[in-house]
Image 1 (tube, rainbow, N blue to C red):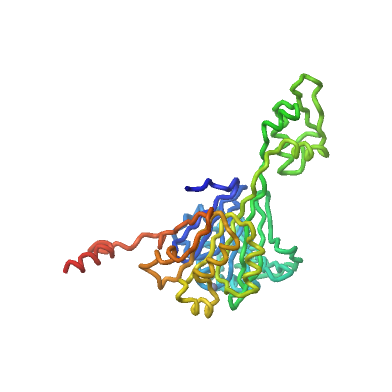
Image 2: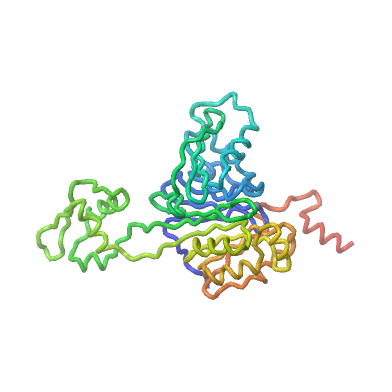
Length: 368
Ligand SMILES: [Zn+2]
């Protein structure tokens, strides 16, 4: 049976096919702060979609995960936006090197800028690459890394750690923050009547401040209205809020199946709701997976047995399996209660030739 959408505020879309270079887009409030994870094949994405991105997470700079950054930069160039880019050490130098391949003699003050956060074990180095200066890289500061925490806004918390892929690769988890949700039954249990105080309490929930110095709440039994100060607002919300499950998205790609990586993966993704995970090889090519530090189906089976995600989206299958991608789904052992999300092989249509589609050509070949 199809499960219900578990997310309140996050809206993930995987914008590439099973064989395409990966690209995960997460819509997240507030507007214009959407998230893009990896910059694979993004030629088919609308400019307005790319312009809505506020932060980018790049797992590593292998070409299939970073090739779309030029198109991304082109789409957002003429905007005064600052894009926060998170990635492994040295990603700012690689971004600068890529962008130095263009002429920047006609820059404008209002061009976008990147603020790059290079994540290492226990610190984050921050660089600035302003478009107004032709994306020249400037070191800003080093800040301590607070455990796995990378960043957060009012809707989402992002955690991440580095794994080994012969080079460091960043794996990330996006956890929804609870939304403002009132339980009507608890409101009446407290003897309170709904009123303009609810939006005021909502504002306090998101900003930490009451719009007015105090809130006045009418009581059911006609007794005197009660007065709530800013200090008491949090306690009031605790009494009338609705319990809600917190959902999360894990993005795991390009990691070797080593003991150290497995520990990091299991710790970071414990309780994950949706796991978006590479599965580059079938189990028969385990040796190849080990050599290139990728996962194969038997590795992914072991991980999902332990993690028991509610949803699993396997991705980044090797292009050598073109025409037999069904084998991936045959080899996966999906745990009870986990819903498998299948991707098409490609998201862009096959080219149409004057003689018809490649499929039709194959059919006519058979007939001859
Ligand atoms: Zn790679």
